[in-house]
Length: 376
Ligand code: PLP
Image 1 (cartoon, rainbow, N blue to C red):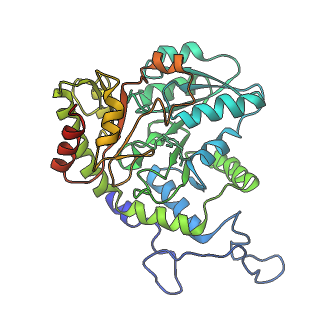
Image 2 (cartoon, rainbow, N blue to C red):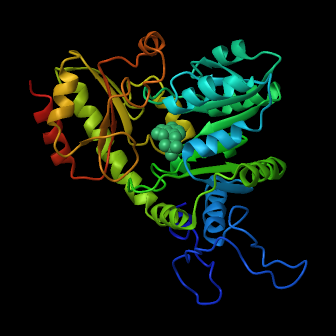
């Protein structure tokens, strides 16, 4: 996997032998003659830099075909166009707020409905399936409560009921978790996060297991048109090369921070699958090769939240995740603001919950920063 990551997009330029994939900043391509094509005609349909990235994600995820989009939401939107009015999906209840908003405020208007359940409990998933259900859409770990869904078991449920299993693999990346190998049909990413890795590019990626599904998504990508441009495709390819070493360091820092937070008197609970006390620790260890670098924690006193967000100096108060810089977010007001307050409270996304995306800084600096910001 480390080798595949580093070599992502290489060997593309036979003319010059360039090591770095060239950025083909061209909207259109000359036809050799009538009825002939170089394989590239127009960049919405295919662009060589984007192709290099699409081939990279397909190979990293163990899929037959990959696709690159202008954002993670564009990737999810295009995948949801596989469904038609009357179709129903069973979806992880505490998933990214933007996906919740897309389903409840956009696709709902077109007659595509969703039931949101705790997918870490397979019985809930089975109970929510009805005759209109066409797919299961999950995140594991979930966002922001880090619950783990059993990928093998949920893939079995999908197979039994003839449903598509779609996994948002943004938090884990193919370096740590490969849902297609465990039975998923589609895996997708906000490549803005770990794959890009530097908080400088917005992008989305999709990989599929079956060729036929790949053809359907290829048609939708070209028809809907929310493709990733060549410059941004190059930035994501460059980010992918260092994914392994970034994530190793990020995970190491995340575990140290989680252990430290667990002992802090102002902290009520820490949600990190790498902690042996986490309810999904054993399962996460079985289906992934690491626990990732996302964690959330709740403080006892809600008034500490604005104080902490104002006083962190190294950890930056900003949305997003997965980059080399550590970021802290307040899900109730940011990433998950579109989930109605009552539902949020029920899920545990309270006004005391904070989410940390742990970066690659020196761990002592991160600990000192949190310690000082948590001091009242
Ligand atoms: N999926 C997850 C798990 C996310 O965290 C996000 C964004 O934060 C998205 C999808 C959407 O991706 P993007 O912001 O690139 O559109």
